[in-house]
Length: 266
Image 1 (tube, one colour):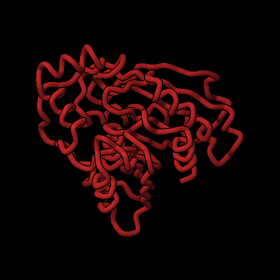
Image 2 (tube, rainbow, N blue to C red; image 1 turned 45 degrees about the horizontal axis):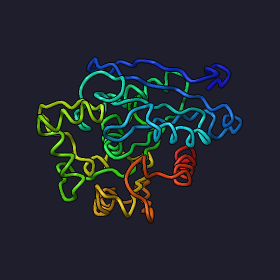
Image 3 (cartoon, rainbow, N blue to C red; image 1 turned 45 degrees about the vertical axis):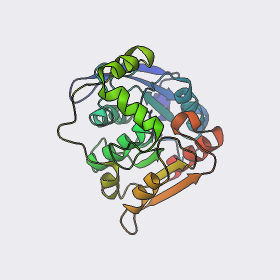
């Protein structure tokens, strides 16, 4: 990649997905990192959790810390979130949103693109890596933080509240006006590939699974199920983080720093 061709400051764009949804995205070059030739061609694409958005403080903090390691960071808002169009499908068609962001990073000149997703975004990076393997939008490395292993989980109080919000008309109103998240009322048809079934399809791209032992949404059987789904010899790592809660809001600077180093070195 010709580093001199990069824009000197953040660039905002509205990307169009393969199914025609307009997605807001932000490209941020981090010139301090490009002196390291080992990472100078790497962009990291960040996929936020449900009810997040590109401009939420936790996402902006993640971008800043990851930018210490990569040449650039791309953040975006999933459909139904932030300034993006469409309605949230809770991780189903969001793979098209992520693919559009990866494609944009490659169009801007990055030979290597790594993806990191949090919670719902974690399930999306797993599925997108599996579905787009060996295509131009396939990532070169993948990290899923606080991701579910399977669909329809209701084993914790926060997940029962989330299911109420997305399945009931009153709940969707709360989501739209209270959480600025617009949810599609239609059920999945067909049901998307479960995250644990996506894991065996990701190799040879390296995969990192990160989960807190105090996650109030998904207990530790979720990351262990994901890790167990990897075939023998696949480049998969599992980090169980003591004291960590859920997703980008709970990811501290030290963890994000380690994540950034892993994403650009693998």
